[in-house]
Image (cartoon, rainbow, N blue to C red; front, side, top):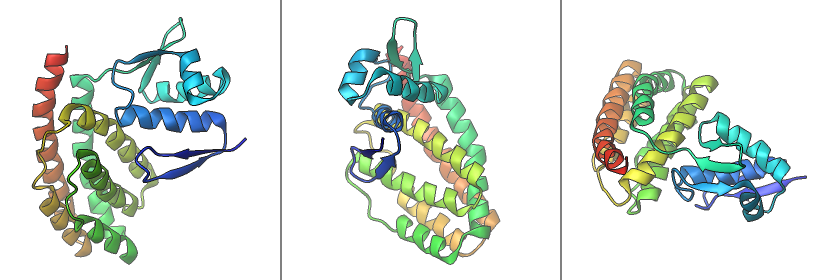
Length: 228
């Protein structure tokens, strides 16, 4: 049976081939966008009813989310959204500081002319006033670089890392504003990729990631410490 999943932001439309896939996509989005808050618990029967599916496809969806370390399951059929932790955030940041520059370097070398044009267009977008819209635009730019690397393994890993990091951004930042320099950094990155300068692209991406994540870690450390 086919099912249609439409993102709550209205930006994406994904066709799921099964109810389990639809449940997985919906739950994953709710976790990543903060609709289901970290630490939130819910009974599986209630969750199935909320999603309009039976227990069998729900459990299949939950197993996938458990493998991604987004939910935890216990013997009493209780689902818990995995809480945010300082250690996970730190590990995500350290990993991205190593992999994002590689993607930028590969994109500068291997991106098609159409991909370069798309990256430049995304870098030139006006800054969105809403935090979630800014995060979505920020993600679009980085994912375009990941895809332009033409390394599917790297792009897949980085996209997943981005989504997991975004869960912290949405929960921790809320109305905080810390990214005024992002637009200029994106434009410099896009220029380096357009100029096919792999070394410069990697250096700019490394600096961009280190500065942004360092600032975010500083904010998150205080928030997560207070939450413990």
